[in-house]
Image 1 (cartoon, rainbow, N blue to C red):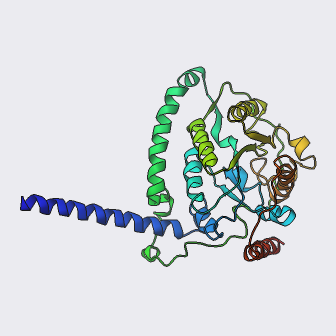
Image 2 (image 1 turned 90 degrees about the horizontal axis):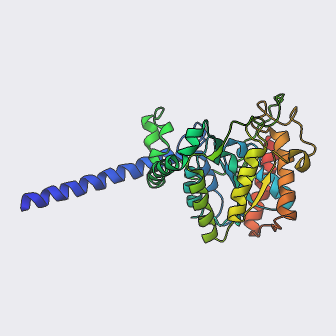
Image 3 (image 1 turned 45 degrees about the horizontal axis):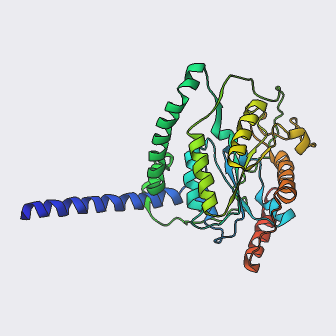
Length: 333
């Protein structure tokens, strides 16, 4: 009996020690090397530097969003606070679990979701016919990995492991680093897009990476926090078309949310936009010129269509946003 009790105590101590190691390493990997691994490490270091409940508008999506929305421009021209929660090849489950973390400190009134990272083409008819079964399996896998990454962040930031030195394992890294970019990725480069605008029709459109299931979860979570959801699309060169737009419009109608498509309606929404001067890499992402134009159109939509008001901040927070805005424009001169 005594031996059994000792073994139980040993097992409990072992799991407590293992849990402590995971918590420690998660803290290390989410706060170190932000400059080297900004894709997933950097976002929460930066948004944690924002005071609680000061972000009214959150923009979510893949790399197309981080190159398109300039939060300090929205502040400068409309006194609206915003942040861009975006990184390359974002998956829907990452958007859900990351937003779940944001709601711990912020209370955004609007969440704008770029739908491109949720939609794709089925390569053939058989893929489409088995889509529901595949989606169910994918959702289960995504949910499990998402939960693990949410509660044990070291599993999400494994890209940092290979170049970690012994000195990086010290908890001397700042947990919050203020960013004047607020999630925006500044890109001054210019590379014209010379192909035909709009991707080819490859057949049946479907949700990818459990996109529908996680959009529903995001929508419900936003409703629980009295937050409105808006679907959107950035100019995408050859990765978006009218058929995809119609597919997302049905999603917007189903959930009764607003939808603005800057790609299909580009000429109408941004008449000054040029594929020759406003992209950084031949149509994949906007450069700074394109981003300023899109942000200008977005702020017009936010004011005239959504009737979003100026953010109410303390004088201390107003001063911080004014300083960050000034520093941003000074840094890009």
